[in-house]
Length: 232
Image 1 (tube, rainbow, N blue to C red):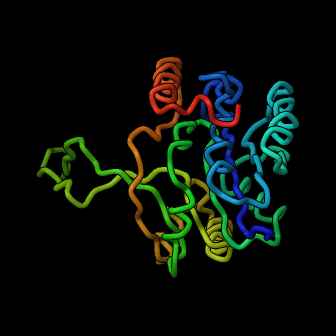
Image 2: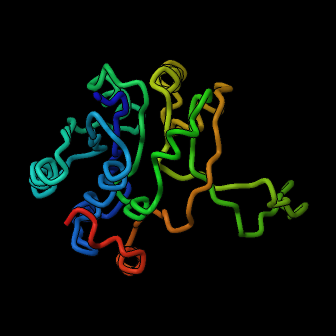
């Protein structure tokens, strides 16, 4: 049965160290782990890599190998200048998809998440996001002075992958373009538009790799989770 779900991996080359995508941890490049997070539990019609900034030739060379390994079409788009334009290009290139799963290139530990369950919980909502409770103490500052402690029991961090219905994502992107909200991410835009967003339990392990220490920790965690034997 043909799938109506498309996976989009945003590769923001400008916002992370240049070698983040190609750096190998636990036997695979970080970008491959992030793509594997989508393909291991979802029946996708394709994966679209939407770069912000120029991809290196070595990174582009990885794509044919991943296509063959995972038996799925992986399409790499031309570079965009922002997240919003990258998402619009990806949406335009996949006109038949009804559900869009948006991930980021430097979150390999999402491979431990059950994204199929996340998609199933979308239901009548416009979007679904992974969340984890805020643990840090948060203070309310008023006129340059600490005014109060903000209760944490209803505060969460949101984290990719994000699941959106196609028409809902298009509303967000159109709104961003028409009102010049290019700095917003798609979930912030969905919230501003009053769309229904379902919160689903995520994982503190699903963090973005930004440096060598985080890469080493992610590699150790993948080994502990027994993920290193997936799709060798």
